[in-house]
Length: 310
Image 1: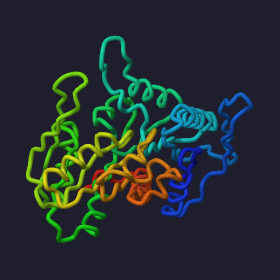
Image 2 (image 1 turned 135 degrees about the horizontal axis):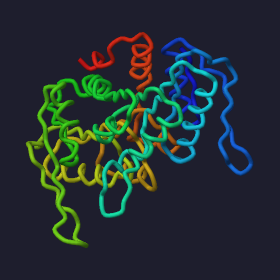
Image 3 (image 1 turned 90 degrees about the horizontal axis):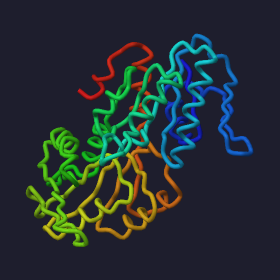
Image 4 (image 1 turned 45 degrees about the vertical axis):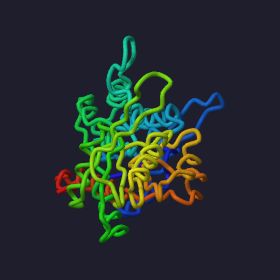
């Protein structure tokens, strides 16, 4: 078993390497002067079971090409089995035709990964579960729920909790965590009455004098999350925190979260934290290295991955 990493999230790859007690495979991932990606594997991989760790986060296209070129290099190096470990699967939000003449980019990316030589994919909290079906190779979609549940129990033990989905589409994810914690569930229904009029937040469920925990898979601009936190506080919530798997945090998202009513925004390290995230007073990352490392070990030893979540 060998572990290879690109440049998207080296600290996570090193943490997984430490968990598995396996050194990272020596490789050179660099750019030519015109910014073309070049990957050179500096160890023998013939007949090996190789795991390539690479999130396709910002800059998404650069990191995507690093992954594809690394997969091709391993295939041409006669690796026995190649698993693409993608903690954050970019382009996942383009999982259907949202209008006429629009792409389904999540499927295109799945085709590219398969064509580049991947035999298997391991990822975390896909934006939509059906993306698993976009691949014609075995695909394991892990869930951050057990990691979040453990942290919530340690931090909020004894508090009256309500798990909140910030939109109707995330109800299944929020319900799974609420069930694990034996907590109440609430849903925020966003409605825009007409163009140019701000959204109305209707809260379905009891949040009065309760600690509310928003649960989502991706935080990008953080507008929805911050608006939801304000609506919950106005509805009488005691405090509001958020647990999100992938901290994309583009544009002014960090400043928006810092000035919001959110007591804390907790994210996994599927995307490497920027300096702004590291110094923010109400933002924190928790590691998914043990979860990914254990899943990789189980795949290598042909053991059950689904039993991780029982």
